[in-house]
Image (cartoon, rainbow, N blue to C red; front, side, top):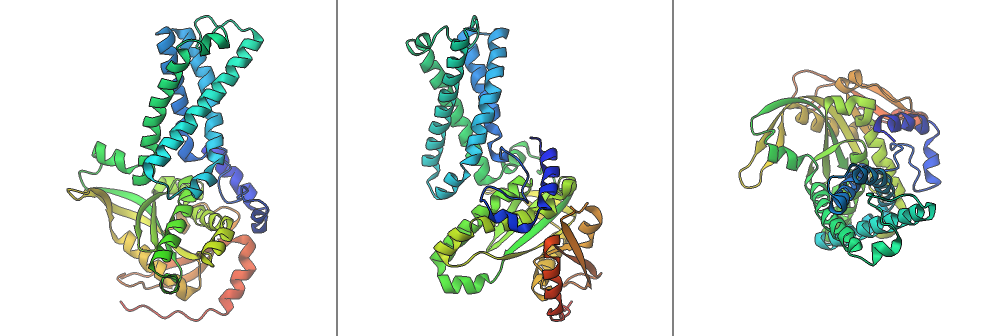
Length: 397
């Protein structure tokens, strides 16, 4: 399904109610309805490339062979990408596995998928007695396994899968845009962009660290950061940096505003954590709770550093977002957005924004209008909480 269509369907599904997500771990009302995750889309291109190489190895530049390779590769790629998406729980359980071990294992698993599905299609083709002249299919299964054809296919699949999986894991470790931006030199010269920034901060982290101890708290943070990464990626956000127990997510302005993914991302993260609440309670005796602030505007982007280069963002937008985040506790709000975001984003029907007023944030000459964003189903709960909210103290400029 396309991203646009899936995002629209998500809006409809979210109106069913917050409690429905408890019925099954795989049903998330606040994530896009996509049968294939963004991180596994590359498998479809991998499949097309694999069968195209195999067609060329068998018949050279033959339009018949290339056409049949395309017909076969797309459904096989879609099937493998689907199964890999459904196996996200396996990756979560083995998230601390060594990079090379997991790379080899995943390559082996993908190659086996290719082999099994290709064999299944060959059985159907032979059973239907379809003419296989100059196609990628053998005349018989015996012809495929009794000759070097099977080794050609396995060799090509192994090389291409290993290379593509290595790049995918590298992108996952370093960030999908980081390598391209550094290699292409997009930010060698200082540029200005309009971007949105979402600051997410873990609640009571100091108390939790003292209670758990340094090692256990580090494992807790590691699991927390891992789990929230998937909904961030699903809503097209990019993690800019991790600062202690805080995560900074960013979007280009137009991409973040489209279908309000910048606001919906926070609630998808909440659902992701709720999905694994039993595992957190069993392992750590607590569930991560967090607050967030969303703001946007013009920032300066540049590549910094000589020996460890990275893309850095500078500007008043980041400072303002940080000040907004510090206001969440005083305002008794989980998620605060600025008036800048409120006026630009088309809010989904299942989200409501409550005006909190204008505030003089530290380091700002002008007051900033803030809004609390929450699910419509929690409207009464938020209103009751507001009655007991203590009046916020003004920050010193």
